[in-house]
Image 1 (cartoon, helix red, strand yellow):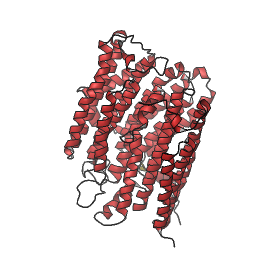
Image 2 (cartoon, rainbow over the protein chains, first blue to last red):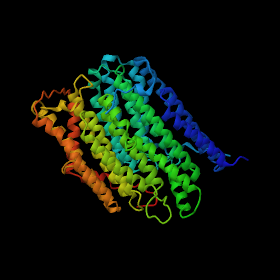
Image 3 (cartoon, helix red, strand yellow):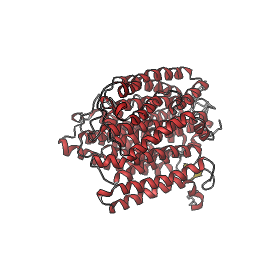
Image 4 (cartoon, chains in turn purple, red):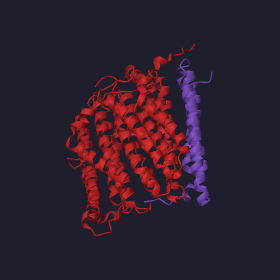
Length: 102
Length: 505
């Protein structure tokens, strides 16, 4: 069987790719996609830990389902906010949205 | 293979206050559809009634007048209705009530009368209440989202205003980013201990103590990522970048509520996870929890940076934003003190007392901003308070009380909060941190008292609009600030039975 650490490595790499996406991309939609990658990395982790550590208790799998739901809710609200910005400024580039600064 | 639990085993009655509020929020959302736009104050009234009923239900067990259900644990230990959660409930419900009081008039004059405002505000309140009662990491995550997502929407509630939309987008992107850190950390803690229940986590860590296992590395990484996720929510440096921008751009009535409610929720989560769940996670030979040093540094940075940057601010809302960052630092002191075995309960009490004092003080200060900003949301420069002492003496007096309380002058609630926090810090051996706290409080006097100076000793128009509900909210906040300052035992009696640590002490 594939050892646990391999799953954890995949999840960690996916999480790092997501973080890179959030930090390096300028498009708000792409940033949102980076966040989704991070949440999916969490799901891989949760399901892998569930399968290898506590296969009899369902908590890991149930948690993964919760993460899906929350990711969907966040995406719905986030896209609505981004569309709102786009209607007004015709841009979704995060750096161009710079009215508030100290 | 899996046992189906009996409904009676869930002990649903223990969750009564939060369930009442959650249900009435759903009903309110439906009822609001049938209320015409020009009568939206009816929605506000209904929201206030729901909050009032819940507040009464939540306060009764705080004074040991009733007990709901069968013991504190509900839903197989995922929900803990103890004194800690009662106190969190009381604090956030008072904030929400004040938040509903200032809203109708503000929304009317900004032409934002939409009933969803109240439903969203109530949803956030439900999220904070669940966070206070979280006995499981899943609940911590879900309630963090439940309290954040409505706040993202509320920050962007002034549709058509570029600043409000921008603040909502910034808050959302950074908030979602940080909550994925939180949930990754939770997944690692789950991997290390094989459970998401906080009490079971505590027991597992106890059993692991002193052993050289890979679980400790998972716990270390997991704990720090949880700290990142919740540190963002409470605006601790270096996760504070969003705070001034969001506070400046969002509608002021929203900021007044969220600056307090999000802080209560975030700290309730931090206390539950770190002080209740992982206080015994000790690296070899150390006397204190492994996360204490990190919290120490965060607290020091937050107090120093928050207070120093606040000095150069020229906008009232940005000034109060940096002030709220600084106050997160003071509560982090209490959290750090909870890292020493035996001080968990005292730390939780100090943090709750500080938060309770902060509810009235900070809400009041933002309510005064609502009064002076007039019809133009960009009119929040410091100069707006010039001459307020002559034109609106009562308002200026209330603002003076709030400013003195934020500094921590005796006879105000802010002093009591700081007193308890510094006391537990010194007792737990964190004297340097308490000293940093005292010095930064002195620095903070500079910018808080400048506001008072501007109100009384400089000439200006001193315009302010004070509808009746807003005046009431400011009055209640000022009264609360003074009452808890003069009679501190009211607060300490309330918090006396708070017990968070599983191992006792």
